[in-house]
Amino acid sequence: MLFIDTYGERAMVNVTKADGTKQPFDKNKIYNTCLRMHATPQQARDVADRVAGKVYEGIPTKKILQMIFTYLKAHRPEIGHRIDLREAISNMRSKPDFERFIQLLLEAEGYKVDANQIVYGRCVDHEIDAIAKKGGETVYVEVKHHIQSHTFTGVGVFLEARATYEDMQEGFKEGKNRYNFNRTLVITNTKLSEHAIRYGDCRGISHTGWRDPPQRGLEEIVEEHNFHPVTLLKGVDTKIFDRLGDAGIVLLKQLIEGDLQKLSHETRIPRNILQQLANKASEIIRH
Image 1: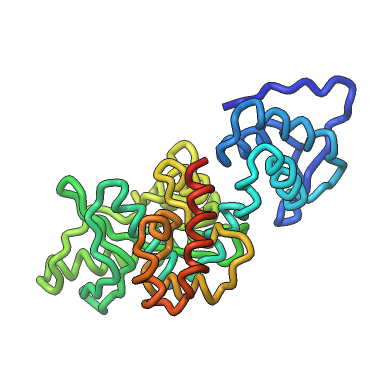
Image 2: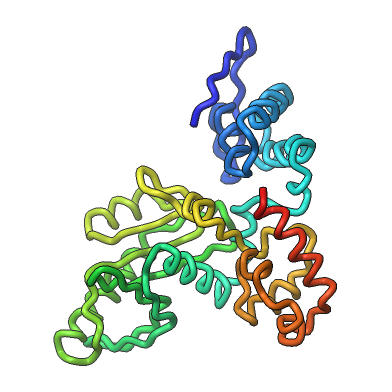
């Protein structure tokens, strides 16, 4: 969705991205970011106007995001309970939390998922993050998580996935495994390099990155299913997230819908703390 802006006589300024590169400030991006955070169109316009009035040449995108949170909180107080979705996902533990997170998303997309399987290839055995099945299709899923959210997922991940896929296919033909894979899917929490996309498209490797036009990216899929990670909650000790993850709780939905007394016993997190977290999660999800 676009918010058409008229800048009048004001000169266009550039913003500095996390990787140090610069690009022109785009008010529509502020507007759309607010909409993804469940602001109304009018609230999004108000925030976009206020941010546009504060930007200066070379302003870091991180500073812009901080302004968005500050201004949007005036309209939507629940914003004060959360951090940025991209940062929240990067804060997850790669194993087992992010892998579990992706498995739940695949199930929400209609797949039956076998997680963490050992599959024998012709040459060696392979530890597979997930095997997803739907409509007669069997998909080898390679999950790649980056702690640095602005790191690009490069072609190396795709080259390794291709080699693994071929070895498992040959293993199937020789009767060493029971999975007749139809395709490979790489899922990551960051954007994909141009080289990776070109190789993936050439080799028939499907991919889902943070934003992956023209198809849906990870951000869009998360918002569509309301599958926000527990790490979205602001000001929570990482030890609590670790204990929740050890109990298989990686989504705000799970925290809201779970038996808090049982979860407290399992995680050794006091029930009143879990209740506070669940209340904040409910405010975020409700809006």
